[in-house]
Amino acid sequence: MLQQNWYNDGNRYIKWIISNPLKVFVNVDLLLFMFIFLKEYPALIIFELYFIICYIIENYKRNKEQSKKPLVITPRVKRLYITTLIIYFLCIYFISVVNFKESSLGYYYFYISLLVYLNWFIILIANIINIPIEKIVFNYYKRKASNKLKTMNNLKKVAITGSYGKTSTKNALNDILNVKYNSFATEKSFNTMNGLMISINNKLDKFTDVFIAEMGAFKRGEIKPKCDFIKPQYGIITTIGTAHLESFGSRENIQKGKFELVDSLPEDGIAVLNMDDEYQTNYDIKSKCKVVWVSLKNKKADVYADNIKLSNKGTRFDCHFKDNKSVVLETKLLGDKNVYNILQAVALAYNMGLTLEEIKIGVKRIKTVEHRLELKKYGDINIIDDAYNSNVDGSSMALDVLGLMDGKKIVCTPGMIELGQKQYEYNMEFGRHMAHVCDEVILIGEEQTKPILDGLKKEKYDEKKIHILNDVKEAFPLMRKLANGNTYVLLENDLPDIFNE
Image (tube, rainbow, N blue to C red):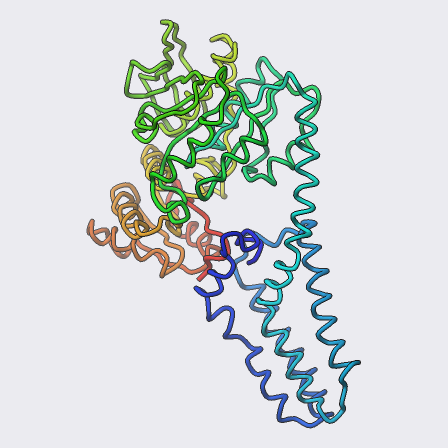
């Protein structure tokens, strides 16, 4: 839980504990008070039997519990193990060596059991103790990465941010640029400062022509330090949406946070922006860099797309440039939002010297991104895997893509999170939308999905076709049961274990 809550960054771990009191405070360890009333040797026997039983119960619960993302044993976690072990050792050393009295054995077992019961907080204490160590480690690897970048004078550096579409745009740009250059992009969704440092230190080499860095943020002020570190000459903002609205506080804060990238670009730099996004067009850009606008709606944009044809096989569209050139592009990616991602990648590639023929080849080579409208097979069922970090616009587009499919349509979702005060409203609208698309609905988490259920009911959706589960593992056998001939299942969002009900 500490790892999934970003090692308590922004007090997320503490907030999780406060919002999950039953998980933290109500467990088998509550019986620890009984040791106070036991004499020496009965206490020893009861203590051993008690914790053997506790272990069996907890192991059984752990095997049954859904765990979508297990603990990753990173060097940081290993350091936490060591610090936690030292804390326990010192606590037990005090009673077993410094102040041991055989007559107080029952109290000692109570004391040890209390340490077990307070494990959530001992882990937090270990994390706090390790803060200076983690800063030293962080600064070491940051200096190493910074020195490496300084030696690569001819390296072209691109930064990509936005509320969503970052990874898809990054991968599209990387596939297109690799037609002409030796391009390298940060892996998966590595978009934190640590992720950038890992990519630079472990993967970037002297043969790389272009480095594409994805930059994420959960609050204002997080993009600028990344830009100061990377010093990109090129930048793309995908969309200013509502993702992480809770931590940003407002959409205006999201706007200012994302534009930290463009405001950091040099005068000879290039920013690629979306003309169809009002939060991009109405921002007062402080940098004097060149701005290239893309659009699906406005032909005055520097690069625009029209004649878009979507199907369950992919997408085809015409791409027009301001110098009166145009090209027909085809991709296996699904959905009109992916047209925006590709269009921004194309616009930057064109400004970086690629020909239309090279761009056409590159777009055709773009690979689907894992867990982002990725088509898979699950037995006879067609899975549209859009499990990664659902958001308002993304979930709406995913339902539209599901609607394009020829066959029975099922959606499986726990809904959307981190949307602040708008979370209920957005999830209810999500439910209303799926009522007009889906033949069956599988909701994961009874409490979490109440707004979606309300949205479905508002559209008078058949309640017999709504299935509510609390464990995503139970969804797959249900999908098989509900499947009928040619069936498509949209997996929309996959919440981390911290949201398990």
